[in-house]
Length: 332
Picture 1 (cartoon, helix red, strand yellow):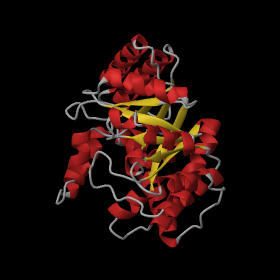
Picture 2 (cartoon, rainbow, N blue to C red):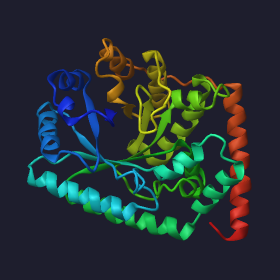
Picture 3 (cartoon, one colour):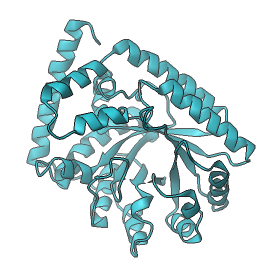
């Protein structure tokens, strides 16, 4: 299945014939952001229009900025209460979504703090260390499990994505990265579970340390962990093609890069893919070319790069030290 995320497009724009035709031509199953101020009548109309074309539309519920924007360990209960309320409203409108996308990330304020230029390392470490709370993590897992059952009562399926480092946790079952980044992900039986493998962002935010080829090699190893652990439930979101919540996300300029990412995911055994995002494709003269590049990408294992190998070794060593230290302190 090939999906596409949409974060900033207005529902009125999504209902336009040219946008619906683009989804139809690419057989793209859309996941559309539903913010607190969303017009639910318009959303219901869009869901019906997409279903009429034989596609499986999904909603991507989000919270207010003050609540953290994305669901996380700290706001899971408020998040699922909102999701259930949305599903009840859409049921009343006779416009049920096929999917609910659960985008597990640290709270927005925390992300801004970690990215703030000039933030001292001790402050970053203090924030991350404060996130490590095994009891709070387990409570959030239970909340998500209960939320999942509540969603299934409406006949909807769930797709949960999180930051790529969480895939390392699948190797030994210890939720180190998930707890560190507030993401109750692997222990919950989502219908699809995956990571955000955004090569352009890895390369761009690393300021030259890593290339898109390095990012692809790193992500391929993580894709393999996903495929082994989740089997056919494994998912990968690829990109990016447009701007997200942060507003400065480096984007791909060549569809061949996105196609190479899709080829790597398929080579690892993942066939449920999503493009981030529709916002960056609508209005492009060659939007169809971008979509077909991903849809037609044949499986191809990317070559391992020297820097990717170094990052892999460094990450494994850091994880080993962190797990040993946390076990000694009784934190996890």
